[in-house]
Image 1 (cartoon, rainbow, N blue to C red):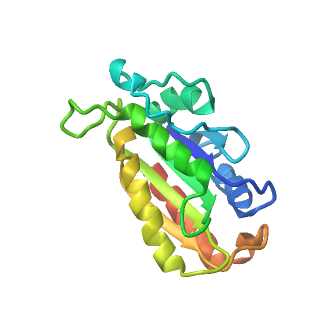
Image 2: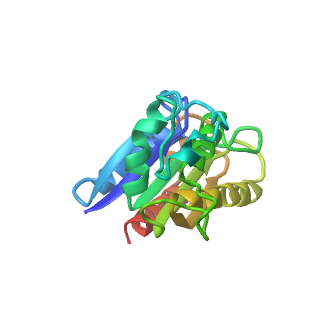
Image 3: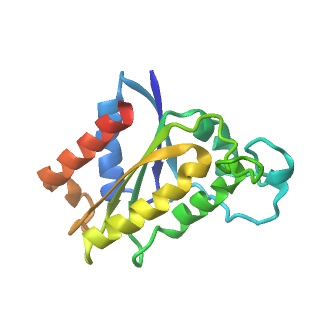
Length: 189
């Protein structure tokens, strides 16, 4: 059974990320082992840039927060799905901190710069914007998701659903839900 890590970076409990998370969890029931991390609620500290992780030669971090406890899960999962709003044309701050902390997987002595246990994993990013150019935001998400390669996520898919600012409004957009369903299936392939 595939292992999927879902990273929800929204602070809106009744927002679109949570609505889509519920839908994805229903689709994964019985076909994948899913773990959900709510980084909008659970603090992920910023990287200290202390390089203590570089002296350990295994993915690790000296900080004691939710990210550190999930390092084994991140390393062993088959796929990761990130659900988040677009904030000021970028990742929300808590998701940027999560991405920065994957520095723990970087090893400058490796050709691919990674000490991830697996380097064939998939990462999908499904983001939401109320206003603005969804196509431009999709490129931003795709570019940032490529940085998860250090943690072994080498296949990337990104999508930004536009005009979905109202909480739960994603559930009223069948075309956007179809894209989400296709991304979920791709994560399981």
